[in-house]
Image (cartoon, rainbow, N blue to C red; front, top):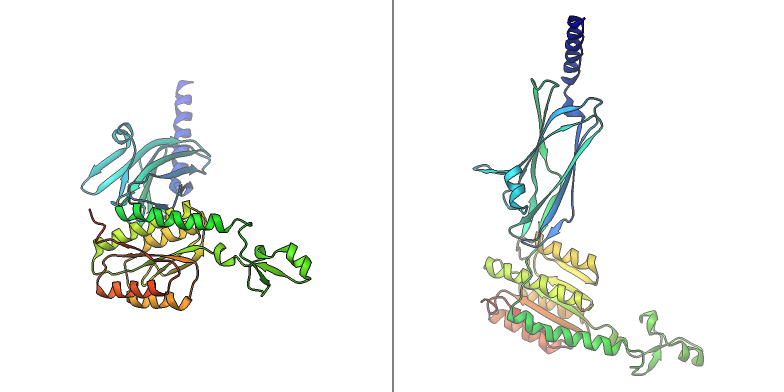
Length: 348
């Protein structure tokens, strides 16, 4: 009886071993997700991953390894690092070893941060498994899907603190002018005014559409002008930090804002809201500090728009004679005095 049981057990194990050698790694599926695609330097980002076994057979051994891009820094506690992380001359790897039942999955997460501004791949993953008895290992590797954009860090500098007064003044003007009791007069509807400017009481009296003459006040906004000069990269990196910080301040004050540059930040139309700020921060993160025209040409393009009731905020790495001349020209024609943030003068 005992020899029969032993023989039966051996046959069962042999059958399972043969079945398990049919490249079981192809039955494993790996999925990834990031909690955000845009981060500031040092901000923690969470990468979630799931390894699923779609096979009808269990996997007694599964190895899952993440090799992150060298610019990414793991932000887990010491216990996690001792247990899963290995750092050597090739970089940092995060290893997991587990068994995976039939139709089961393994899930985990890893927090990391990005060191500096730019667009980065996440790295590679390696998936290892074997047959039932662990005799024949099988390995699969691929790129971790997705990329992370690191935008410029926020900054708190003397010029930013001084700019708070300018932004506050714009915010106050908008608050006062948006008050419906602040009516300067009435005029016929031309078709260009927003519908909210129509005075229905006056329209009923006149028998035609009448608008309040305060549209020039409700359009108070800001335009951020960025002078991209790749000759001084450290100063330009500071300019990008200033740009991102200014846009966050305008967003916090609910002041509609646009962005215009003479380089690869391009021009972004006026807007407000989370998606608008996200798009600008994304452009900042992707910028290679490439200039297409000079700063005077940027100012000339601005003047051709003939914008009214717009506060211009100029951000430049240096304020040389050419830049100063362009700024002075804008001052002569702008409704509001432009605010100038110079990265060179703002250095600690």
